[in-house]
Amino acid sequence: MLFVDREEELGVLEEAYSSGRSQMVLIYGRRRIGKTYLIARFLRERGGVYLCVNHEERELALRDLVEQLLAQLRLPYAPRVSSFRDLFELLAAAGARVVVVDEFQRLLKAGGLTELQHAWDQRLSRSGILLVLSGSAVGAAERVGLSHASPLFGRVTRVLKVGELGYKAVRAFLPGYPEEDRVRAYGVFGGVPGYLALLNPRLTLEENVAKLALEPGAPLREEPVILLKLELRNPSRYAEILRAIAGGATQFSEIADKSGVKVTELPKYLRVLEEDLELVERRYPLLSEGSRRRARYYVRDRFTSFWFRFVYPNRVLLELGLHREVASRLPEALDRQASEAFEEVARQHFALLAKSGRVSFTRIGRWWSGDVEIDLVAIDERRGVAYFIEVKWTRQPVGKEVLRKLEKKAEEFPWRRGERREVYVLYSRSGFAFEPEEGVLLFSLSDVQRDFERERPLVTEL
Image (cartoon, rainbow, N blue to C red):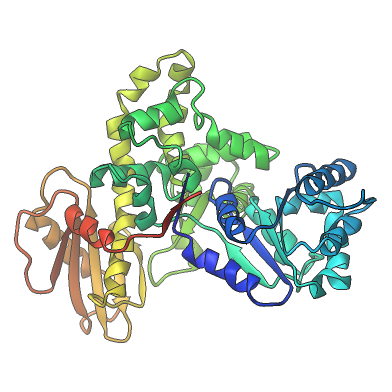
């Protein structure tokens, strides 16, 4: 198994380990995002005790955790553990230097968090222990670990929110693929290591997607539904909302109409999808952040987007065993996903240019107003420069007419109009049918590939 990137996260854990003081580190992020691999990579170097809270019922949880602990620690006696506080203090008595408690948020219902607080205050905080609490239910982990009402409030010394990998790291999972297929894979699986690690490098991308999401018994064929059922009591409502957004409903009223959810009830469902599960994100046009009237909603997780666009509408055919017929339509679906993913690749590439000093900006984002929309706009507020960026995932080289349309759209952008210096930036999958001119930057997919090749991430084997 490959462990890719995460140098910063490993650095935080190493710093906590080397501090010489007791540390309570909170690590959280959505399922399959790579928390367990991050922890495994750290434990491989430092050693320690790994516990996973598998139950929310008190007696079951405590008994299970004690069994896990005794399987890892060699004690000269049979300890008597009748409470979570006994369990946590036993860790200190046994001299455990690093202890990981995975799915720690389940301790709340089991009654273990308050006892953990007491054990931390009375003994663990002076024992030199590194206590790592890991959780995969994002909203629950934040409430249980960071809110003022939590027993652990004020005791967590470091927080690591593990997010998706960027395109630079995603490329490392696909070493033998052409760059076009790397973008397509990013469009389907995003930067989620748990999905990317399932890809078989000996198969084409289309074969991989079919085996992972379409064929009978495919490991990801019901993935979004399973995730919703694990986290929610009424998953069908949330599924309809995700289906509506993935299908192109980006505005509040459109989502309500297409999902069949009442306008008065929709906010509570969107809040859960945004904040607790991080499956949906709310976007605003650049310079209008926070304007609810101009907000748009998008499916944040790329595989969830792909699933509701392609797998969900074909479920009847798949259940009838017609997965080969469905797979024959994959090329068009993969290109649709890639078209959107290429915009994010361009954004990350533009940040790479800024890192190397080739451009400079202080803010970047999509911009729209009425019928006018620009893929990306970056502004340098110090130097008064605006970069207008158009991204094209087309089979044909981009012609100069695309540049002229971008120049026309840029006239509508209000920031320092008439005073700013304007730079036009085009990204194209298939290159260009014209030469660059003053104030114009052109980047083909091969240019993007070359620049990302220079920024390779850390890759190790677990």
